[in-house]
Length: 81
Length: 147
Image (cartoon, rainbow over all chains, first blue to last red; front, side, top):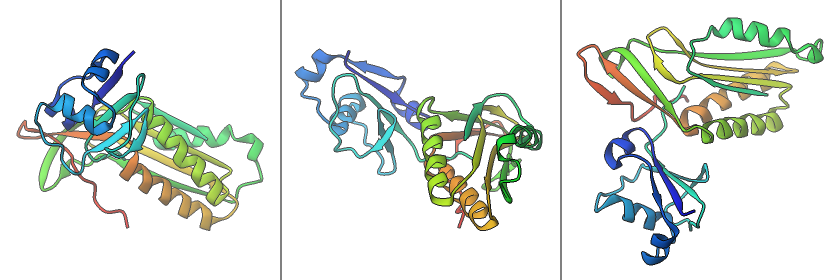
């Protein structure tokens, strides 16, 4: 199942398309938190302090623990309305 | 409560009129309706804007808007609420968002409409990408302050 990672708006420009991290890689790389997900996907790119994070469509902070089957999203400050 | 996210243009006043006409169960109950309509400008940050693309996070955006309205329903005793938001390609003068609430008295209606709109602006996952008249594209990275 793994973890599905999504990037929206300017974060997609920076990070590329959505990606899936397999269960095997989660175990091999010891990916346990949102921060770990970012570090795995970012290949050294820094995450700006204003980047927002959601796990399973609810806002969280970067220390939040993730598990197999989660959907993790990174996006810039919102600008609707 | 009704949340609509749609790429099709809409006339907020027609939507509002039809929605209220169908609220027959509340006939004689509400004494106040507060409405906010947001419309696309043809300028931003000192530049002329010719078009805009509005992106959202399908699933999370709807869930967040429902939560905002549910919270406002409890806090302000809303009898009914409606949020309509455009996504996709938008032209200047197109309506972007409609927020409407129905309550017994005006105080709750004004405050709830404002609170829903401010929460939508600051927390609902939507993002605007502007196309300027000179052809440049840019993401909008901040909102003007509402209070």
